[in-house]
Length: 119
Image 1 (cartoon, one colour):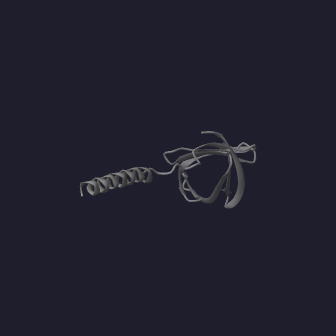
Image 2 (cartoon, helix red, strand yellow; image 1 turned 90 degrees about the vertical axis):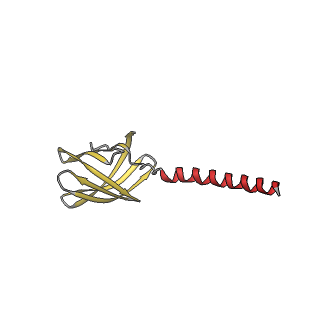
Image 3 (tube, helix red, strand yellow; image 1 turned 120 degrees about the vertical axis):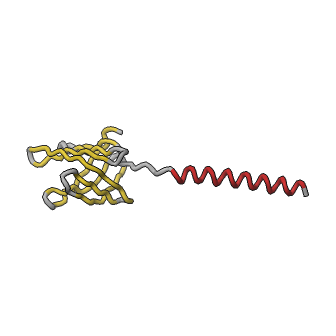
């Protein structure tokens, strides 16, 4: 009888330890792979920060326009809330070190392929 109590006690202890470890990992948010700086060969640059802010420099012809604001990610949907009140919702995808997204210029989506240049 004493042996059975020890076996049950050990199983309960192992199960409890497993549950605690699982809950610790489940409570930590998954990092968004967008963090870092992305650029292309045209001069466009996007920087995404862990605090939910972003900076962007987008070439519009010969002029470079700077954007700042907040971003949020839900699965593969990226919402960019620019400080001037503009909201851009786009689908994003990362394959290797390349980020694919559509930037909206004057209501027209422009496909961008950006390369990760720093973390």
